[in-house]
Image 1: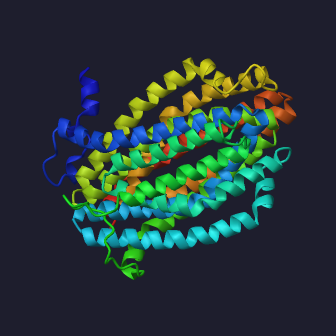
Image 2: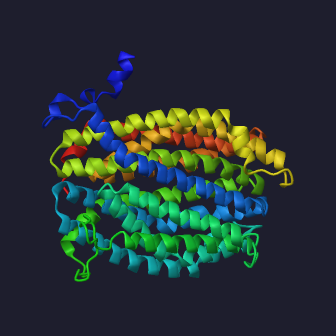
Image 3: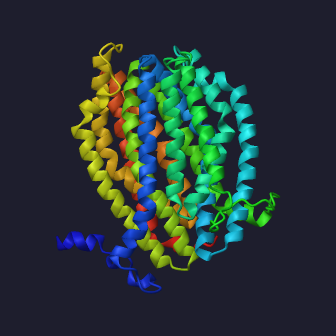
Length: 481
C-alpha cells in the first residue's frame, strides 16, 4: 500500500534538480488535472461510443455496408490530418499564452488559425471531390465502390465545417475549457445519431437513404457542432472569456502570430500526414484479405478507438497543463502534470484491458446479427483480434499521454520522427510480412489478421518506449514558443 501511495505522490514525480518552487498538494494537483481531464475523457469516450452506435446502425444494412463506410475512415482522416497538425500548434500556443496571461495574443493566434483553416479546407475539399474515385480504389474499395464513393463525396463536402469546428475546439482546450468542447462535440454526434436513425432506414416522413443517409446525418451533426463552437466565442455581458470574437477584431494575417503557431504545427502536421499515410497503408493491407476479414478487423478497431479515446482525453489535459505551466515558467509543474496524466492513463488502461478481454463476446455481438453473411466466421475473427486489443492498452495509453505532454511543450519534431518510424515504417512492413508468412507460406489464412494485429502491438510498444525516453530526458522543459 505504501508503494502504491508513493507511486501516486506528486513529491516523488519531480526530481529535486528541476524544482523551481513549492509543489501543490496531492489533492490540489489531482483536482486540477481532473477538472480538465474528466470532461475531455468523457467527451472522447462518448464520441467513440456514438461513433460505434453509428457503425451499428450502418451494420443493419449488411456486412458490405460496414466495409463501405469503414473504407472511408482513413481517407477522411488523411484529408483532416493537416488540420490536426495545425490544431496541435493552436492548442500549444494558446496554452502557453494562457500561462503568460497574454489574452490578446492568444485571440490573435486563434483568428489567424481560423483564416488559414478556412482557406486550406476549401482547397482540400475541391481536390477530394475531384480525385474521389481513384482515392477510394486506392483505399481498397472494389465490390463496394459505389456505396463507398457516395459516402465519401457527401462527407467531403462538409470538410470546411468540420475543420473550423476542430480549430475552435483546439483553442478552447488550450485554455483548459474542456467542458465546452465536450458539450459541442457530444451534441454534434448525438444529432448525427438521431439523423442516422431517421435517414438510414427511413423513419416516418424521412426517405430511406441507407449509406447516403448516414453521410448526410454526419454532415448535419458537423454543422450543429460548428454553430455551437462559434457561439462559445461570442462576448458575454457578465464576464469576459479568455477566448472571444469581438466585432472590431482584425482578421488580417499576422506574421508573428502565424510564425508561433507554425513552429509547433509544422512538426505536428508532418506527424499527422505520415501517421495517416501509415494507417491508410495498413488498412489497405488488411482490406486485401477480403470483405469479411476487413469487417472483423473494423469491429475490433471500434473498440481500439474507444480505448484510445480515454488516453487521448487524458493526453489533452496533459497538453494543456504542460503548456500553461511552461508559460508560467514552472517546468517542474509541467513535469508533474505530465506524470500525473501518465498515472491516470495506466489505471484506465488496466481497467479497459480487463473489460475488452473478458467481455469480448458480447461486445462483438453488438455488430453481428444472426442473418449477417458469414456471421460465425466474422464473429470469431473479431473476438480473436479483441484479445490483442486488450493487450495493447497499457502501451497505447502511455504512448498517447507521453506524446500529448511533449506536444504541449512544443516538442513536435521528435514526436513526428518517432511516429514516422513506428507507424509509417514498422507497422506496414511488419504487417505485410506477417500476413505473407502466416497466410501464404504457412497456409493459415484465418490467422493472417492476427499476425497483422500483433505487428501493430509491436509498433505500439516501440512508440511508447521512444516517447517515454524523450519525456524522462527533460529536454522539452527548455523549449521557447
